[in-house]
Picture 1 (cartoon, rainbow, N blue to C red):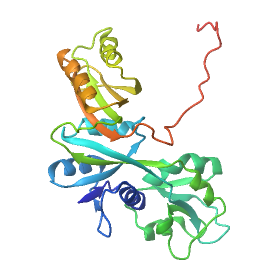
Picture 2 (picture 1 turned 180 degrees about the horizontal axis):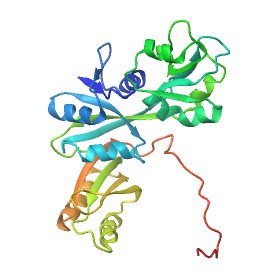
Picture 3 (picture 1 turned 90 degrees about the vertical axis):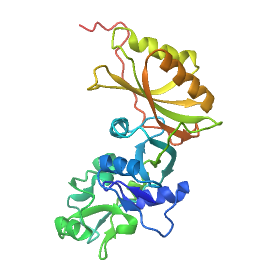
Length: 288
């Protein structure tokens, strides 16, 4: 059985399942509710997996990292695929130009392009029916929907092709595993860890474990923990399961709590994660 979050785009999740060979076929993809409910349901029902939006294998979505680390320890992301944008901008008439009714997944994927187009979004829950969306849009309003969901009487508008410029959207397969996955080819690993004592230099000591293991962190983010110290969420390429086990054993020996959140086969995930062009302080600038 395969499911998805109720906040996720059905056509995109189904396409990801087809590209990844994760199942579904002519079957129905289950709607598992909120992201938290989706993870809890996958953890509690045997042979149930879920397709989830992951951000990027090398730069995980922060919300997913947080909810994964707060969920059952059996949960593990085991595969990742990228799919092209299926979004379209449509209206009742060719000159429709009102606010665009768009759901949560569409806003997540298209917000930058919509802003560049000067389109004003009107956000609705993903569960909002097509009839409700068309009613909200009115005669002059517009919709952002998947091409397979364009309602009768609506047409793509000038500028809709720009939504095809949306970068490929990355999805992962969430399953339950009782033990660490075996792999003998380079894979992308998401690892959460927390030094047992949050003192000055504790992070530096833990990062030394990664350096000694020949691991180059591609992603590192801190998160406050209700248990006391900070936790850190990382993503890196690992050559094989033996290297990962050795790393985890060394963390155990140092009393560093840890949990593997994902093992995604591959090391070249194209396109890469979002990149920015930093503007640094000028050399010799006085910060005062």
